[in-house]
Image (cartoon, rainbow, N blue to C red; front, side):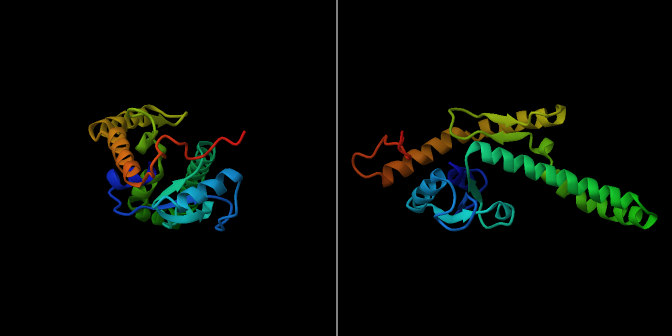
Length: 191
């Protein structure tokens, strides 16, 4: 789904897909991560292999695959680091006259970066894999964040994101599925 979203919505012609793990080697990570690695390796996607947390924002991949819990922790950690950095820069700039002058010169250049990492500007994230457009907003969303979440949902609805993803996945599945494979789960229950 992330590959299709990157192609259709983000206009990345050949998305590189990475799997979040504790090391680059295929045998690193939990049993679920190792099985996901095996499946992604055989999927025909442009699989970049395992990526570590430090690789997420470095451009080594366009799509990061992980479970929802880990993804949420990563996202909130990144938000916290961004807030800390901007707060620290602001405090340092206000500490002296030269800092204030430097801060005044940098502020117009830093504002777009701050806005890019501000959860309120995005509003929320699309929940892929459900029928319809669903945007998950931050639990601490204010009026600005909620307005942007509604905008994000409206854009997704206009672009028919979930239907386009479902169509692309169905086409890909029918092209690559061996006889009798339709409907089989990607990861078998081992209980």
